[in-house]
Image (cartoon, rainbow, N blue to C red; front, side):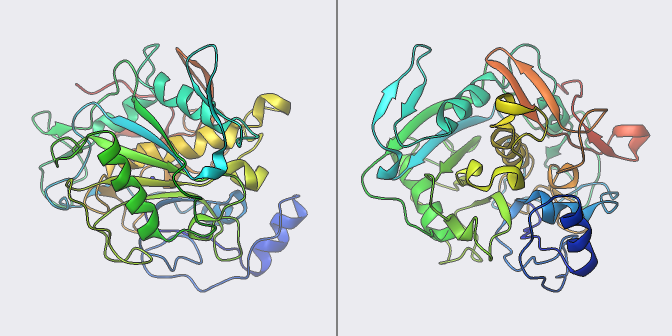
Length: 363
């Protein structure tokens, strides 16, 4: 997931407990910041940030309050049409482009096969009558700021009928930065909008640009001591972006900073659901799904749905364990089976709220 920006770092006893459990050591602790249920939150533009597994464990027991509507930013609260996802493989480091037998784009500089897996995931959403996407359709826009439920007459989050994948672009025009700023990532998304011909605000109204950085890079400090996170999302006009807001001639642009997730192994979800080789890309689909679900419920953060701490729908259910009503588990789409996490549902348990992996689609 306008997530609550969360670069989560463990402190004292928590670090020792996690280390004893076999988790990797976390970065040095920082004081909790207002508006975040995680420690180390010092970057307000990191909306819906996926903390590392170690850092996220510190939030256990704090995911209780329901989401409320933020009133919209530039008149945009949620993605109201069928969501469209454009994958942008940023940088010459991705290597030579090819096509596999199923028509997916392959890249020689992609040792984990993230490119194909991402395409399969987003092409599969909204197929096979999947109801993982249904959880998000209960949210809406155009209602009173602070509201926690939606009338049937409101414009609800759209369902990705027939697949969310709208396009794939490999941009080898230059090497992706070793440590891209938020502004640079936003500008790459704006560049992609032009590439795809989405040159008006209307064309980008229900669109998100997923900017994928190549292995070995550290976008916004990913996989460094200052970046205990796996991904985050935002929009181009956020003035708090590192490097400043990015000017767009194409209207508001929603984008995701998706680093090369497998560079962080189990800290970003490898084998979280499945064992052995079947789980090598668990973190990829969980993290990418996390940010997708938060973008469609909080497209221009934080004008959409967040809780009192600033956390978005997927933040509240990250690293919650596996199985059951709201834990991470495999979701079967027409394009395969994917490890996915649950997301928050305000209407769960009679309105008390909770994490769900499945929900009827709200028309």
